[in-house]
Image 1 (tube, rainbow, N blue to C red):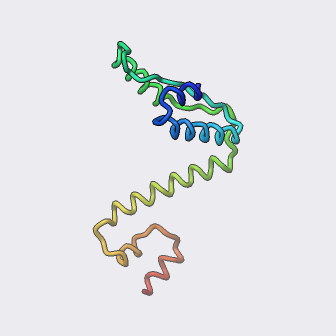
Image 2 (cartoon, one colour):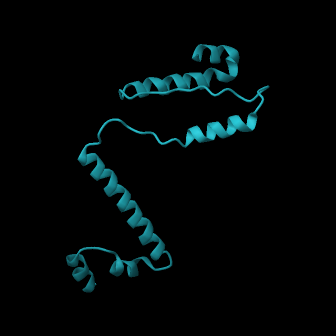
Image 3 (cartoon, one colour):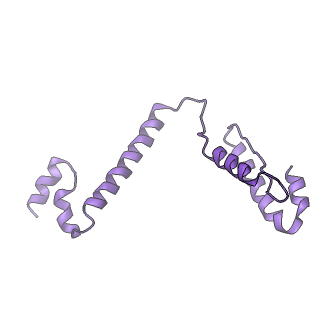
Length: 119
């Protein structure tokens, strides 16, 4: 299929096809199931709106893995999400404050709070 795509518009599609081939090759290194679906353009195709809606629906289908995620990986992902959320909330709360005033209200351990009380 990539050969057909490259031969249909040689100059325009050459770089795109090469990029696609590299992407598919790099994905094969992860031993994951790959699904590549060609959705043709709308030139001369009736039902353009229907095709657009179907493509949009397909883009939002949740990808489900059939392998179990190790506990350590799940924990690391959840911890990163919580840290990001905490950082965003902290930035929102303290967006109008001077940075050294924020040190006293930063959520941290008791030892650091005692140290900051001497500053």
